[in-house]
Length: 383
Image: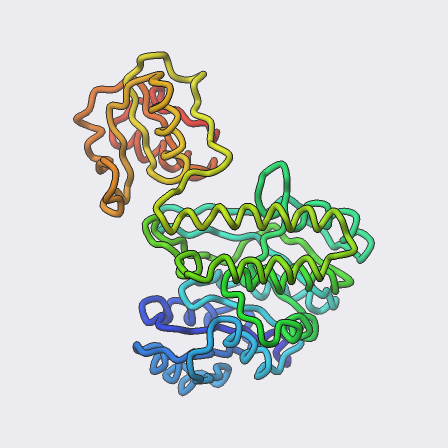
């Protein structure tokens, strides 16, 4: 069987993760694939790693180029691809062994765009599955406009993307993604490139299949690591360029213009992260109904939820903070965050898990119980 899908991996200084990434692709149960590694001017050992794979696996093709950025690297990979379908994998991520076999039947039916769920990967013990808000099914053109468009770019209820714009959890027709990249010739958003491709691609697609099963492990940054695009001094100029581009693409649909403006306002808020300000416009409400006034509590989690809880309790002085812990306490240098082992030596009434996600909360609770914490004293707003 001829290969149906080209897997494009843009690579820039990713020697730490590259082997895990490429091995996960090479070991797919669907063997008939094309793998294109685009070395975008790496100065570490990434280029040599790519070359070794090309020498040992005939399915792997390597392209070396001067550093031109993610958008140019992906586009070069598309140009060099020979298969009717395209997908992407970032060089610091990895995928399940059966990933592309899951899409085989859909590709055989000629579906334009196939969307899968996502696994947010924090570490080997902590992962969060995201399946999206749309029902699992095939949508024709009319149904795309009637059922997906109303929440596609921004879902007002959840205050986040309705359809995640990431390209790496999607399998798409080559001609479809190629057309969208050509329209971006000469532009370099860096922040929002996926957004500028995915939503115009939905506009062009005649059929979309939503598959809630996740196969893609998206590695998450440590909270103290500021993405380069947010620290970029030209962040606002590039963001406005993206806003204008999306507004031009969907100028005939008031629903989507409203969503684009909400996305823009959300993105403006993200710039605060460059200054260490992680407060969200919409707070996570502390579970006051599960804690007695004046109780001594431990907060588990120093992410966005934990900071929101601490801010609320600092203002209201509803209860006493006996301890604030996080598994990655060493990554936080500006707050008094302790290792979880200190729980054993602290007197408290309730332990509040301040982490999003039902499954993650259950895993944390079980870990705490295994440490000897009374399950009746562990509470969360997320189960």
